[in-house]
Image 1: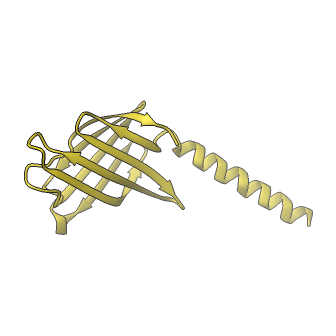
Image 2 (image 1 turned 90 degrees about the horizontal axis):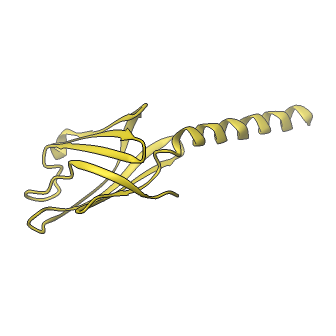
Length: 118
């Protein structure tokens, strides 16, 4: 029983440390035209992006993405989409290449400041 309890406490500590390593990126970010939500659940990074072009056209995209340190990437060749994430302190810089099927003239590239911490 003591060994099982020690193992459970070890795992709980590991999960807490793993979450703490990621929680500096989790949250809602925004700029004048867009909102970006970054999530981490069960070892998977995901994002929800809502953006409006200068002409008022809207686009949205929700997907999982890969993260390596401070660099992230979502790539989907079927949607002609490559989005790169650069995480800085309380800021995410997005670079969108391709249309990402978000609408004519809609591009989410830019800087997003952290506005809500979960």
